[in-house]
Length: 282
Ligand code: PDD
Image 1: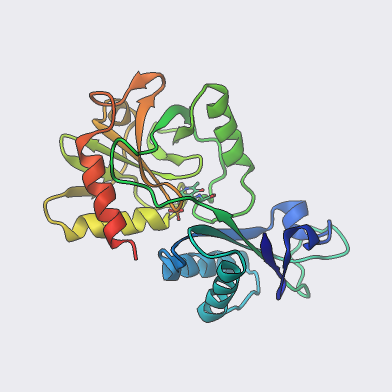
Image 2 (image 1 turned 90 degrees about the horizontal axis):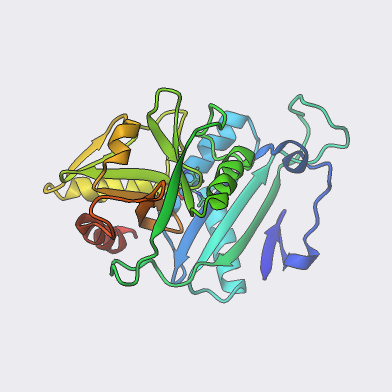
């Protein structure tokens, strides 16, 4: 595939960065994953806002405008044949010839981007849906999970633990036994028709899919939607559990810690909500 590195398009196998890049040495950078269907990015502005917030918070002096990022995305989509592609955008603080913890003042950030196949848009048809089995674990990540840092060691260790137990995702709980998020997505729970998701704070990533889904649900007054803390007990007795992320959209969890969620199988609210999400996401 064709990738973008520091101002140039090139074949993936020709892309080179220094091992002294702070992204490599410290995980000192941020990233975004923007899903694109038929060449159209979903939630592009929201992804750009989150990236700018991350860059500002980390003090990384990378100042592309949204239009410049849009141009990179458009170039990559056309160089890679368009269609349904995820675009990964990555900015590290840059390369410095000496390893030092202090933020250097004189480096140029490294900008890297590539595309990957995401297949067809997720379906709202329960017979076609990708379902998930999850397990629960105590959240052992850092306390700045609102930053979309490339330093994902905490997340991938949780993910791996889940895989070792035959699961595809891991629901994480803080020390107060409240739900935070999953290893690579946000979480919604449904009980007696009420849809709830954890509040935004430093414990979770402010997911773009979460944001769009809340917007869509609030536009339809028939839904009762709450952003609030959610206890472990509530999760264990939920009627439905959904995962949200750019690649999954809204995905049903049908098994938690080896037991069926709700009545077993995909719940009745899920397909209604995934269909609304699909229709509104642009
Ligand atoms: N993951 N929480 C975590 C920890 C995530 O890694 C992600 C996304 C989300 C959902 O965010 P969004 O709706 O903006 O995709 C929540 C991406 C896709 C990844 O790392 O591949």
